[in-house]
Structure formats: C-alpha cells, structure tokens
Length: 348
Image (cartoon, rainbow, N blue to C red):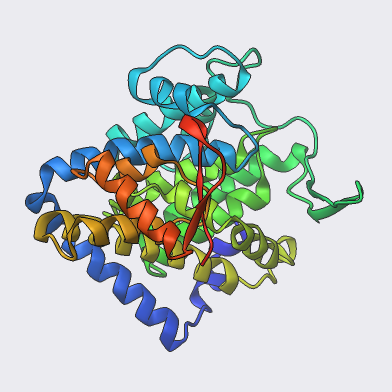
C-alpha cells in the first residue's frame, strides 16, 4: 500500500533525534532477557495488570466502559459478559490472549485480520469477521453538535483488494529489509487505519495487530506494560498524529513523520516504565514510598487505589494510602469522591 511501496520506503530519511530513538528502543529490547531472569514473580503480576489495562483502555478509547468490579472478573476469570459493553471487553480479552500466546505463528494476512475481528465480536449479536459493506468516514463531533470529517478511508468496494495489497507489500518490505522493522511496522498500521476495512472495531484491531507484529520482531514490552493504556494516556496526540499523517495518503503524498514519532515515543515510554518497575522491584531503588510516588506521577488519567496497588507489586494498601495522603498534603493530587468508588487525579 501507499506507505509500504518500495519507492516510498526507500526514499525515507530520518534525522538524528529519530535515529537516537530507534537505537534506544533497540537497546531496551536487548535488556529484556535480563529483566525476565531478575524478577519472575514481579513479571507475573505485571502481566496480569497489563491484560486488564489493555482490555479496559483499548475499549475505553472507543467509548466502551465496564465497571471496575466487573472488569477484572471478565478479563482474569473469563466471567461471561452480561451486556454489550462487557461483550466487547470479553471479545478483546480473547483476541488479546491469542496474540500473547501465538503471535509468532500468526501472519499479517487478510485471513488473520478477519479471524481476529470475528473473535472480538464472538459474544456480540452481530458477528464480526467481515469487511465493511458501506463507506465509513472518520468523523469528529464538535461541541456545537456539528460533524467534521477527519479522513475518508478506502471505499468499501475497494477494501478487499486494498487489504490484500497491504499484506503483500508488508511481506515484501520485511523480506527485502527495505527499512528497519520499527519503520515498516507502524507504517503498516497507519495504512490499515487509512483503509479502515471493518464496519466497526478498526482502532481496537489496529492495536491488536500492533502487539502481534511487535512480538514477531522481539519487542515484548506489551506483555508487561499495556501499550493501549499508554496510548489512552496520550489519546489527543494519538488522534492528532493520525490525522496529520493520513492527509494526502490516497495520493501517496502523506507525511509519515508525526505518526512514526508518536509510535516510537509510545514504545520508548513503555520500555522506560517497564525498566523502572522491574528495577524498583529488584533493586529496591528509592524504596516503597518512591515507587508509589512514581506510579502516581506517571498517571495522566484518574486512578483508584486498586489500580495503584496493581502498579506497585509487593506494596501494601496501607502504604499506598500513606503515600497518597502525603502527596495530597503536598497538593500534588486530590480525591474525586469518597468511599470505594473514589478516584484520584494529579494536580501537577
């Protein structure tokens, strides 16, 4: 497709900052095995947290929310869903589990895309796993109720052919090593989103495919740090960079720099968080107080005590509450409510 055409890829050039970012991500990938050996129990806890956060954030980005009390039951205990929102989360849970287990055996093909989409919608009344039959403009609803078209994806009647071409060009780009995999991979996801091949669920599918392809190139951070949660924390930039890099896409005249910079930034942030969590657990760097403080300061969205506990393995709830009170006194955070449903938000 447009971003993966050989001539387009061969003509790409990167500045010193971008090259430094790529090197940094590569260095983090090289440290993964060391982390695995150092703190296996902490990794097990991080995997559980990441699965819950990924299922929650990827759906919440699309306006789908589930009560916290039900979320863990659905994601970790495979509880049957009761309503549409829970059905969507349960489907994402299953597709995510398949990728965690079998990503290296899953090719980037139209058939795999259809299978993953069908799995996402397996609990829904209307089945998935079918290309769109009508055109689906990407729109933005303004505060005054008006609608702005952000992008016009590939028309429905051209979608099957476009997806076939995307998969073929991706395979050729990887086989011929025209660019670094960390260039080819995000551009494949950009093209997938510009095609927008399904009637619904394209954003969630893009995030699942991102994880699948990262695993295939040895980037395992998404197993322990939710990339979906990191994206949700920066969702304004996510949508802005997608819009910028999609302009002129149909003509092959689009600027891929905003999207690549954003994608690499997300991956780098996830790896830094991963190193911080494992390093703190293993070496005790900064003590328990500092670990809780760092977890709080890394949150851009309102968070609960339970979420903070999950992010700080091995630290008691009493300790978490103590640090929260200290940070409240320092006017760094404040509660938004009382009781078990209370959330906390950052002030600085």
